[in-house]
Image (cartoon, rainbow, N blue to C red; front, side, top):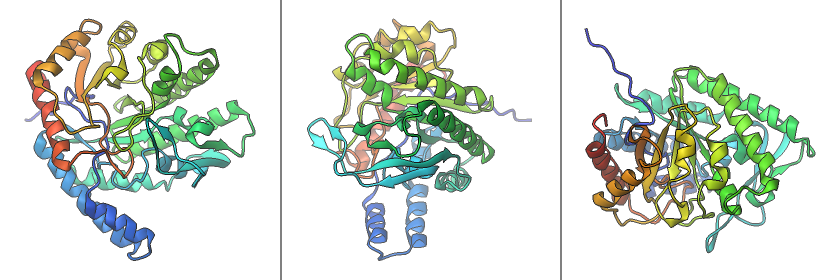
Length: 372
C-alpha cells in the first residue's frame, strides 16, 4: 500500500505565478480584439500554450505549477472586473512606475460588490487542474482584497458606496469568502493572494507607517484574516507582497519595517517577499513574523525577474544565511522575486532566461534544505 505524502506549501522552491506570454498568445489576443478570430479560437491558443508551459514547469521539477496567468491581461483588474458590481474602464492615465507610465486600465464600483459564480477564473482553474499530473499541485493566484480599496492613484474608483468604506469592506470580504470556497470546491488546495498595498504603504513611509495609512492597514488585516479564518483547513493560503512589476520597472522602494507589525498579524500560511535588490531593505522585519508563534513559512524572492542576468549560487546562499539570523532556516523558502509577466507585456527577459531563473531557484533550494 502506497501512502501519499502531502507536500507542504509554500514549497522550499516555489514560484510566484505569472510567466512570459509567448508571441503566439499575444498575437491571438490582438487578433481577437481586432475581431479577426473568435473567442473559441483564442481559447484554443490559450489552452495549447498553457499545456506547454505546465509541461515545462513539471519537467523543471516544480511541485506546484500555474497557468502563467495566460488568460489575463492584468494581474489584478481581470479578477476585479469578474466580480458583480465592478466595471473595467480605460482611464486617462496609466499607473506611474519608476521612469515609465503603464498601459491604461482601472475599475469602478457600479453596484454592490458580490461573488460571481460564473467568474471566468473558475473555468481557467478547472482547465489547469485537469492537466496537472499526479503529485503536482495546481496553484491559483488572485489579487488581495486591499488592492481593491478605492484609490485614485491605483485607478480604483467608488461610484456606488459613496464613501461608506465599512459597507464596501464587508461586501468585499463576503465576495472573497465565497470565491475562495468555490475555488476549493473545484479542487483548489493552494491559493495565493497578490498584494501591492503593503509594499507601496511601506514605500510611502519612513520607518513608521504614516498615520493616514493605519486605518487602511487595519482594514487589510481584517479582510485577509476574515478570508483566512473562513477557508477550509486543507487549503493553503499564501500572500505575495510586491512593489510593482511592469516591463521590468517598479513602483515602490523601501524596507518592510513600516508594515512588519501588520504582516505579522495575518493568519495566512506563508509569505512571498521581494528581496532581490536594495529596494527591499534588510531581513530584520522577518523577526516579527518569526515571533508571532504561527510557524509560517516565508519565501524570500532573491532571484530577480526584472533582468536576465543570473545571480550566483554563492550569493543566494549567503543571503539565505543572512535571513536565517532573523527567522529559522526551517521556516524559509526560495523563489523568484515576483512573476515574470504581471501584465501581458511581460518583463525584459526571454523565455529561456525565465526557465534558467527557475532552475537556479530549484538547484539552490535543494542544496540548502534536505526536505526540498
